[in-house]
Length: 418
Image (tube, rainbow, N blue to C red):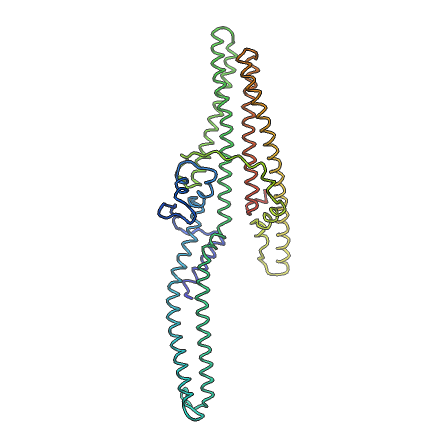
Protein backbone atom coordinates (compact mmCIF):
# COMPACT_ATOMS: atom_id res chain seq x y z
CA UNK A 1 0.00 0.00 0.00
CA UNK A 2 1.19 3.49 -0.74
CA UNK A 3 2.73 5.37 2.15
CA UNK A 4 0.41 8.36 1.66
CA UNK A 5 -2.65 6.12 1.98
CA UNK A 6 -1.29 4.53 5.13
CA UNK A 7 -0.61 7.92 6.66
CA UNK A 8 -4.09 9.10 5.78
CA UNK A 9 -5.65 6.06 7.49
CA UNK A 10 -3.57 6.74 10.62
CA UNK A 11 -4.59 10.40 10.51
CA UNK A 12 -8.26 9.43 10.36
CA UNK A 13 -7.90 7.10 13.32
CA UNK A 14 -6.16 9.77 15.37
CA UNK A 15 -8.67 12.47 14.48
CA UNK A 16 -11.63 10.30 15.39
CA UNK A 17 -10.20 8.89 18.61
CA UNK A 18 -8.60 12.09 19.93
CA UNK A 19 -11.33 14.49 18.78
CA UNK A 20 -8.96 16.49 16.58
CA UNK A 21 -10.58 19.06 14.32
CA UNK A 22 -8.94 19.81 10.98
CA UNK A 23 -9.14 23.30 9.52
CA UNK A 24 -11.97 22.62 7.08
CA UNK A 25 -15.28 24.40 6.49
CA UNK A 26 -18.47 23.09 8.06
CA UNK A 27 -20.75 20.90 6.01
CA UNK A 28 -23.17 22.52 3.61
CA UNK A 29 -26.72 22.25 4.88
CA UNK A 30 -29.07 19.92 2.97
CA UNK A 31 -30.79 21.34 -0.12
CA UNK A 32 -33.68 20.08 -2.19
CA UNK A 33 -31.19 18.93 -4.83
CA UNK A 34 -29.07 17.10 -2.25
CA UNK A 35 -31.41 15.56 0.32
CA UNK A 36 -29.72 13.21 2.80
CA UNK A 37 -30.89 9.61 2.73
CA UNK A 38 -34.21 9.30 4.53
CA UNK A 39 -35.00 13.02 4.49
CA UNK A 40 -37.98 14.23 2.47
CA UNK A 41 -38.45 17.63 0.85
CA UNK A 42 -41.33 18.22 3.26
CA UNK A 43 -39.05 17.58 6.23
CA UNK A 44 -36.41 19.95 4.86
CA UNK A 45 -39.08 22.64 4.52
CA UNK A 46 -40.04 22.13 8.16
CA UNK A 47 -36.41 22.41 9.27
CA UNK A 48 -35.85 25.53 7.19
CA UNK A 49 -38.58 27.65 8.78
CA UNK A 50 -38.01 30.07 11.65
CA UNK A 51 -39.71 27.87 14.25
CA UNK A 52 -37.71 25.31 16.22
CA UNK A 53 -39.95 22.37 17.09
CA UNK A 54 -39.06 19.88 19.81
CA UNK A 55 -38.98 17.01 17.31
CA UNK A 56 -36.70 19.00 14.98
CA UNK A 57 -33.85 19.52 17.43
CA UNK A 58 -32.10 16.23 16.59
CA UNK A 59 -32.06 16.87 12.82
CA UNK A 60 -31.07 20.51 13.28
CA UNK A 61 -28.07 19.47 15.38
CA UNK A 62 -27.03 16.70 12.97
CA UNK A 63 -27.22 18.83 9.84
CA UNK A 64 -26.57 22.39 11.08
CA UNK A 65 -24.90 22.44 14.50
CA UNK A 66 -21.51 24.16 13.89
CA UNK A 67 -19.54 21.97 16.32
CA UNK A 68 -20.89 18.61 15.17
CA UNK A 69 -20.79 19.43 11.45
CA UNK A 70 -17.18 20.61 11.83
CA UNK A 71 -16.13 17.29 13.33
CA UNK A 72 -18.14 15.36 10.75
CA UNK A 73 -16.67 17.37 7.90
CA UNK A 74 -13.19 16.70 9.25
CA UNK A 75 -13.77 12.95 9.32
CA UNK A 76 -15.42 12.90 5.90
CA UNK A 77 -12.57 14.95 4.47
CA UNK A 78 -10.18 12.26 5.66
CA UNK A 79 -12.34 9.56 4.08
CA UNK A 80 -12.34 11.48 0.80
CA UNK A 81 -8.54 11.59 0.91
CA UNK A 82 -8.44 7.89 1.67
CA UNK A 83 -10.68 7.10 -1.29
CA UNK A 84 -8.44 9.18 -3.54
CA UNK A 85 -5.40 7.30 -2.24
CA UNK A 86 -7.25 4.03 -2.74
CA UNK A 87 -7.85 4.85 -6.41
CA UNK A 88 -4.10 5.33 -6.91
CA UNK A 89 -3.45 2.15 -4.94
CA UNK A 90 -5.84 0.16 -7.14
CA UNK A 91 -4.05 1.37 -10.27
CA UNK A 92 -0.67 0.32 -8.90
CA UNK A 93 -1.97 -3.08 -7.77
CA UNK A 94 -3.51 -3.79 -11.15
CA UNK A 95 -0.18 -3.02 -12.84
CA UNK A 96 1.58 -5.36 -10.39
CA UNK A 97 -1.02 -8.08 -10.96
CA UNK A 98 -0.46 -7.87 -14.72
CA UNK A 99 3.29 -8.24 -14.16
CA UNK A 100 2.69 -11.21 -11.86
CA UNK A 101 0.36 -12.85 -14.38
CA UNK A 102 3.03 -12.42 -17.08
CA UNK A 103 5.59 -14.01 -14.74
CA UNK A 104 3.26 -16.95 -14.04
CA UNK A 105 2.75 -17.45 -17.77
CA UNK A 106 6.53 -17.40 -18.35
CA UNK A 107 7.18 -19.89 -15.52
CA UNK A 108 4.51 -22.27 -16.83
CA UNK A 109 5.97 -21.98 -20.34
CA UNK A 110 9.45 -22.74 -18.96
CA UNK A 111 8.04 -25.82 -17.20
CA UNK A 112 6.57 -27.10 -20.45
CA UNK A 113 9.82 -26.43 -22.34
CA UNK A 114 12.02 -28.25 -19.80
CA UNK A 115 9.56 -31.14 -19.55
CA UNK A 116 9.78 -31.62 -23.34
CA UNK A 117 13.61 -31.75 -23.42
CA UNK A 118 14.84 -35.38 -23.87
CA UNK A 119 17.22 -36.84 -21.30
CA UNK A 120 17.63 -36.36 -17.56
CA UNK A 121 19.69 -33.13 -17.54
CA UNK A 122 18.87 -29.67 -18.82
CA UNK A 123 20.51 -26.22 -18.85
CA UNK A 124 19.01 -24.04 -16.07
CA UNK A 125 20.17 -20.61 -14.87
CA UNK A 126 23.59 -20.98 -16.57
CA UNK A 127 24.25 -24.53 -15.28
CA UNK A 128 23.45 -28.11 -16.19
CA UNK A 129 21.11 -29.60 -13.61
CA UNK A 130 18.84 -32.58 -13.45
CA UNK A 131 15.47 -32.12 -15.11
CA UNK A 132 13.68 -32.97 -11.85
CA UNK A 133 15.64 -30.30 -9.94
CA UNK A 134 14.86 -27.68 -12.59
CA UNK A 135 11.17 -28.53 -12.60
CA UNK A 136 11.09 -28.48 -8.79
CA UNK A 137 12.71 -25.05 -8.73
CA UNK A 138 10.24 -23.74 -11.29
CA UNK A 139 7.32 -25.22 -9.33
CA UNK A 140 8.55 -23.52 -6.14
CA UNK A 141 8.93 -20.21 -7.97
CA UNK A 142 5.45 -20.62 -9.44
CA UNK A 143 3.90 -21.29 -6.03
CA UNK A 144 5.64 -18.27 -4.48
CA UNK A 145 4.49 -16.04 -7.33
CA UNK A 146 0.91 -17.25 -7.02
CA UNK A 147 1.02 -16.70 -3.24
CA UNK A 148 2.26 -13.16 -3.80
CA UNK A 149 -0.62 -12.61 -6.20
CA UNK A 150 -3.08 -13.96 -3.65
CA UNK A 151 -1.75 -11.67 -0.92
CA UNK A 152 -1.88 -8.64 -3.19
CA UNK A 153 -5.49 -9.43 -4.13
CA UNK A 154 -6.25 -9.87 -0.43
CA UNK A 155 -4.78 -6.48 0.41
CA UNK A 156 -6.91 -4.91 -2.31
CA UNK A 157 -10.09 -6.56 -1.00
CA UNK A 158 -9.26 -5.74 2.64
CA UNK A 159 -8.68 -2.08 1.85
CA UNK A 160 -11.94 -1.95 -0.11
CA UNK A 161 -13.86 -3.45 2.82
CA UNK A 162 -12.24 -0.94 5.17
CA UNK A 163 -13.38 1.95 3.02
CA UNK A 164 -16.87 0.50 2.73
CA UNK A 165 -17.03 0.48 6.53
CA UNK A 166 -15.60 3.97 6.88
CA UNK A 167 -18.92 5.83 6.84
CA UNK A 168 -20.32 3.54 9.52
CA UNK A 169 -17.12 3.97 11.52
CA UNK A 170 -17.51 7.74 11.43
CA UNK A 171 -21.10 7.44 12.64
CA UNK A 172 -20.10 5.18 15.54
CA UNK A 173 -17.14 7.35 16.60
CA UNK A 174 -19.13 10.58 16.43
CA UNK A 175 -22.28 9.23 18.08
CA UNK A 176 -21.23 10.32 21.62
CA UNK A 177 -20.58 13.87 20.40
CA UNK A 178 -23.82 13.93 18.44
CA UNK A 179 -25.84 12.66 21.41
CA UNK A 180 -24.12 15.12 23.74
CA UNK A 181 -24.95 18.06 21.48
CA UNK A 182 -28.59 16.98 21.07
CA UNK A 183 -29.03 16.54 24.82
CA UNK A 184 -27.47 19.95 25.49
CA UNK A 185 -29.72 21.75 23.00
CA UNK A 186 -32.83 19.99 24.29
CA UNK A 187 -31.82 20.99 27.81
CA UNK A 188 -31.54 24.61 26.65
CA UNK A 189 -35.01 24.41 25.12
CA UNK A 190 -36.45 23.10 28.40
CA UNK A 191 -34.69 25.93 30.29
CA UNK A 192 -36.08 28.42 27.80
CA UNK A 193 -39.61 27.14 28.33
CA UNK A 194 -39.17 27.22 32.10
CA UNK A 195 -38.10 30.85 31.92
CA UNK A 196 -40.92 31.56 29.50
CA UNK A 197 -43.37 30.10 32.03
CA UNK A 198 -41.99 32.39 34.71
CA UNK A 199 -42.39 35.27 32.29
CA UNK A 200 -46.03 34.41 31.71
CA UNK A 201 -46.66 34.46 35.45
CA UNK A 202 -44.84 37.75 35.96
CA UNK A 203 -46.54 39.31 32.92
CA UNK A 204 -49.94 38.46 34.43
CA UNK A 205 -48.78 40.00 37.69
CA UNK A 206 -47.76 43.17 35.85
CA UNK A 207 -51.14 43.28 34.14
CA UNK A 208 -52.97 42.83 37.43
CA UNK A 209 -50.81 45.31 39.31
CA UNK A 210 -51.33 47.83 36.52
CA UNK A 211 -55.11 47.55 36.92
CA UNK A 212 -54.88 47.73 40.68
CA UNK A 213 -52.53 50.73 40.55
CA UNK A 214 -54.87 52.61 38.24
CA UNK A 215 -57.80 51.66 40.46
CA UNK A 216 -56.01 53.01 43.53
CA UNK A 217 -55.30 56.27 41.67
CA UNK A 218 -58.98 56.57 40.85
CA UNK A 219 -59.94 55.84 44.46
CA UNK A 220 -57.43 58.44 45.67
CA UNK A 221 -59.17 61.07 43.56
CA UNK A 222 -62.41 60.13 45.32
CA UNK A 223 -60.73 60.20 48.72
CA UNK A 224 -61.36 56.48 49.09
CA UNK A 225 -57.65 55.55 49.20
CA UNK A 226 -54.50 57.12 50.58
CA UNK A 227 -51.34 58.19 48.80
CA UNK A 228 -49.58 55.41 50.69
CA UNK A 229 -51.96 52.85 49.14
CA UNK A 230 -51.20 54.22 45.67
CA UNK A 231 -47.44 54.15 46.35
CA UNK A 232 -47.65 50.57 47.61
CA UNK A 233 -49.27 49.34 44.37
CA UNK A 234 -46.88 51.46 42.30
CA UNK A 235 -43.94 49.74 44.00
CA UNK A 236 -45.43 46.30 43.30
CA UNK A 237 -45.98 47.24 39.67
CA UNK A 238 -42.44 48.56 39.22
CA UNK A 239 -40.96 45.49 40.90
CA UNK A 240 -42.93 43.18 38.62
CA UNK A 241 -41.89 45.22 35.55
CA UNK A 242 -38.24 44.98 36.58
CA UNK A 243 -38.53 41.21 36.97
CA UNK A 244 -40.18 41.01 33.56
CA UNK A 245 -37.34 42.97 31.95
CA UNK A 246 -34.74 40.67 33.52
CA UNK A 247 -36.61 37.59 32.32
CA UNK A 248 -36.87 39.03 28.79
CA UNK A 249 -33.11 39.57 28.74
CA UNK A 250 -32.53 35.98 29.84
CA UNK A 251 -34.96 34.67 27.22
CA UNK A 252 -33.19 36.63 24.48
CA UNK A 253 -29.84 35.20 25.50
CA UNK A 254 -31.16 31.64 25.66
CA UNK A 255 -32.99 32.00 22.35
CA UNK A 256 -29.80 33.19 20.65
CA UNK A 257 -27.83 30.26 22.07
CA UNK A 258 -30.44 27.74 20.92
CA UNK A 259 -30.60 29.34 17.48
CA UNK A 260 -26.82 29.18 17.03
CA UNK A 261 -26.68 25.56 18.19
CA UNK A 262 -29.35 24.73 15.60
CA UNK A 263 -27.49 26.47 12.79
CA UNK A 264 -29.39 29.76 12.69
CA UNK A 265 -27.42 32.94 12.26
CA UNK A 266 -29.20 34.84 15.01
CA UNK A 267 -31.72 34.46 17.80
CA UNK A 268 -34.60 35.62 15.62
CA UNK A 269 -36.45 32.32 15.90
CA UNK A 270 -39.54 30.97 17.62
CA UNK A 271 -39.10 28.15 20.15
CA UNK A 272 -42.24 26.04 19.88
CA UNK A 273 -43.95 24.52 22.90
CA UNK A 274 -42.68 21.16 24.13
CA UNK A 275 -45.15 18.25 23.95
CA UNK A 276 -46.53 17.10 27.29
CA UNK A 277 -44.38 14.39 28.92
CA UNK A 278 -45.46 10.76 29.07
CA UNK A 279 -46.75 10.13 32.58
CA UNK A 280 -46.39 6.39 31.95
CA UNK A 281 -42.80 6.56 30.73
CA UNK A 282 -41.44 4.61 33.70
CA UNK A 283 -43.99 1.86 33.16
CA UNK A 284 -42.52 1.20 29.72
CA UNK A 285 -38.94 0.85 30.99
CA UNK A 286 -36.96 -2.15 32.17
CA UNK A 287 -34.86 -0.38 34.77
CA UNK A 288 -32.40 -3.26 35.29
CA UNK A 289 -31.65 -3.35 31.56
CA UNK A 290 -31.50 0.45 31.33
CA UNK A 291 -29.10 0.63 34.25
CA UNK A 292 -26.81 -2.02 32.79
CA UNK A 293 -26.76 -0.18 29.48
CA UNK A 294 -26.13 3.19 31.13
CA UNK A 295 -23.28 1.91 33.31
CA UNK A 296 -21.42 -0.15 30.71
CA UNK A 297 -21.91 2.47 28.00
CA UNK A 298 -20.82 5.43 30.09
CA UNK A 299 -17.75 7.14 28.63
CA UNK A 300 -16.08 7.54 32.04
CA UNK A 301 -16.51 3.82 32.74
CA UNK A 302 -15.18 2.91 29.29
CA UNK A 303 -12.13 5.15 29.72
CA UNK A 304 -11.47 3.76 33.21
CA UNK A 305 -11.43 0.25 31.73
CA UNK A 306 -8.60 1.04 29.32
CA UNK A 307 -5.12 -0.27 30.14
CA UNK A 308 -2.30 2.26 29.94
CA UNK A 309 0.34 0.28 31.84
CA UNK A 310 0.68 -3.34 30.72
CA UNK A 311 2.09 -4.63 33.98
CA UNK A 312 0.42 -6.50 36.82
CA UNK A 313 0.19 -3.22 38.72
CA UNK A 314 -1.27 -1.51 35.63
CA UNK A 315 -4.01 -4.11 35.33
CA UNK A 316 -4.72 -3.89 39.05
CA UNK A 317 -4.96 -0.11 38.82
CA UNK A 318 -7.24 -0.44 35.80
CA UNK A 319 -9.57 -2.77 37.70
CA UNK A 320 -9.73 -0.40 40.66
CA UNK A 321 -10.49 2.61 38.46
CA UNK A 322 -13.10 0.71 36.47
CA UNK A 323 -14.84 -0.58 39.61
CA UNK A 324 -14.89 2.92 41.08
CA UNK A 325 -16.33 4.42 37.88
CA UNK A 326 -18.95 1.67 37.63
CA UNK A 327 -19.95 2.28 41.23
CA UNK A 328 -20.39 5.99 40.59
CA UNK A 329 -22.33 5.35 37.38
CA UNK A 330 -24.59 2.87 39.16
CA UNK A 331 -25.31 5.33 41.98
CA UNK A 332 -25.95 8.16 39.52
CA UNK A 333 -28.39 6.04 37.52
CA UNK A 334 -30.25 5.14 40.73
CA UNK A 335 -30.47 8.86 41.51
CA UNK A 336 -31.81 9.64 38.03
CA UNK A 337 -34.42 6.90 38.37
CA UNK A 338 -35.48 8.20 41.80
CA UNK A 339 -35.68 11.76 40.46
CA UNK A 340 -37.83 10.59 37.56
CA UNK A 341 -40.22 8.95 40.02
CA UNK A 342 -40.24 12.12 42.11
CA UNK A 343 -40.88 14.45 39.17
CA UNK A 344 -43.72 12.24 37.95
CA UNK A 345 -45.41 12.49 41.36
CA UNK A 346 -44.77 16.23 41.63
CA UNK A 347 -46.29 16.84 38.21
CA UNK A 348 -49.42 14.86 39.06
CA UNK A 349 -49.78 16.76 42.36
CA UNK A 350 -49.13 20.16 40.72
CA UNK A 351 -51.70 19.49 38.01
CA UNK A 352 -54.27 18.53 40.65
CA UNK A 353 -53.56 21.75 42.57
CA UNK A 354 -53.85 23.78 39.38
CA UNK A 355 -57.26 22.33 38.56
CA UNK A 356 -58.49 23.09 42.08
CA UNK A 357 -57.14 26.64 41.89
CA UNK A 358 -58.82 27.11 38.53
CA UNK A 359 -62.19 26.11 39.98
CA UNK A 360 -61.64 28.51 42.89
CA UNK A 361 -60.66 31.30 40.48
CA UNK A 362 -63.74 30.80 38.31
CA UNK A 363 -65.98 30.79 41.37
CA UNK A 364 -64.27 33.92 42.71
CA UNK A 365 -64.84 35.75 39.42
CA UNK A 366 -68.57 35.01 39.55
CA UNK A 367 -68.82 36.02 43.23
CA UNK A 368 -66.81 39.21 42.66
CA UNK A 369 -69.05 40.26 39.77
CA UNK A 370 -72.09 39.74 42.02
CA UNK A 371 -70.50 41.76 44.79
CA UNK A 372 -70.30 38.74 47.08
CA UNK A 373 -66.50 38.78 47.36
CA UNK A 374 -64.19 41.53 48.53
CA UNK A 375 -61.41 42.89 46.33
CA UNK A 376 -58.62 41.64 48.59
CA UNK A 377 -59.88 38.07 48.64
CA UNK A 378 -60.57 38.19 44.91
CA UNK A 379 -57.04 39.40 44.17
CA UNK A 380 -55.61 36.71 46.40
CA UNK A 381 -57.46 33.93 44.55
CA UNK A 382 -56.39 35.38 41.20
CA UNK A 383 -52.75 35.48 42.24
CA UNK A 384 -53.05 32.01 43.71
CA UNK A 385 -54.25 30.61 40.40
CA UNK A 386 -51.46 32.35 38.51
CA UNK A 387 -48.97 30.77 40.90
CA UNK A 388 -50.48 27.28 40.67
CA UNK A 389 -50.73 27.49 36.88
CA UNK A 390 -47.04 28.37 36.61
CA UNK A 391 -46.11 25.68 39.16
CA UNK A 392 -47.96 23.03 37.14
CA UNK A 393 -46.23 24.08 33.93
CA UNK A 394 -42.83 24.10 35.61
CA UNK A 395 -43.51 20.66 37.07
CA UNK A 396 -44.39 19.45 33.57
CA UNK A 397 -41.12 20.81 32.19
CA UNK A 398 -39.15 19.34 35.10
CA UNK A 399 -40.64 15.94 34.29
CA UNK A 400 -39.73 16.39 30.62
CA UNK A 401 -36.13 17.15 31.61
CA UNK A 402 -36.02 14.16 33.99
CA UNK A 403 -37.19 11.86 31.19
CA UNK A 404 -34.62 13.35 28.81
CA UNK A 405 -31.80 12.99 31.35
CA UNK A 406 -32.75 9.37 32.01
CA UNK A 407 -32.97 8.61 28.28
CA UNK A 408 -29.60 10.12 27.44
CA UNK A 409 -28.03 8.27 30.36
CA UNK A 410 -29.01 4.99 28.68
CA UNK A 411 -27.06 6.21 25.64
CA UNK A 412 -23.91 6.86 27.65
CA UNK A 413 -24.45 10.58 28.24
CA UNK A 414 -24.28 10.83 32.03
CA UNK A 415 -21.90 12.85 34.20
CA UNK A 416 -20.99 10.53 37.07
CA UNK A 417 -18.85 13.14 38.89
CA UNK A 418 -21.67 15.58 39.61
